[in-house]
Length: 394
Image (cartoon, rainbow, N blue to C red; front, side, top):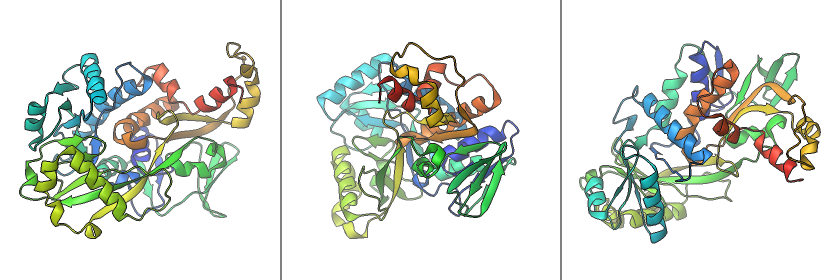
């Protein structure tokens, strides 16, 4: 297992639970040090009313993650305080009405402004969708809990930069030095997996996100649920609220910036000017604000990339006929890279999609029934991108 964030730890735990001996290799000193390392992530369902593959994955993943969280410490590791998504314009209000009609009330419900404000505990200008079983999670706590399975061996400060296939084994190197050899490798290092020749063509992109940490005040203790608009703010964990997160498609620098702290504060103003006052933002020196930045990793269709990898060049040659007629699927076995799998591209939904994706990979590897409909598994499959290119004649 290469990468010990949410995707890597979840996949390792799913395999370990089935009796696999898992070597979990992480380039940092401990688990969850990059995008999975924020103090609070939001357990929030961004859904479609049209039953898309992504919506199906999110609903299933939400239920699976919620069951996992019940084993952790409520209040420090997670809290099911609910999530309120504000309808900050007419278009959002219309979308929310469609969602409220499409899903059961125990999953989400529409709240008018007075009820939403009462639920949040702070003044709000809008109503919105309330997710009663949502909340916030401390992602490192989930990763640490999963990585402690007795069948998992965590090996830190190990950064694989190359994979080679030798006989029936995959060998991981950090230059000239052999780190490990195993029949199965799962690449779970977000966009960093593009460094490997076998996964270099996967269309993963990095999006920088910065959160701002705000000290809890006596007045801000009133915030009783996560509230989202363009950004989000969570009730305090260990005396600090988490506010975020920015989206920057161009920067490769992870040093927190004052400009993005200001952007996060502007998002907070959109959520609740009352909460801005309760947090005494006007009295704070923006230059002194604390936070952290990390890279989200996402795919062009916003679905994660989960499953076995094929040899791209051999795949293109084997199924070249598809470029002429997409209905004529050649009866040729897929040229798999035997034993090589990927779990990546979770974007800002990793808390919901990564654990279930670990179960999906474990099902692939153990020849089990899949934990999601086959149509959803296929929608997440790594081969989907090269297949689309072939069909479109590119």
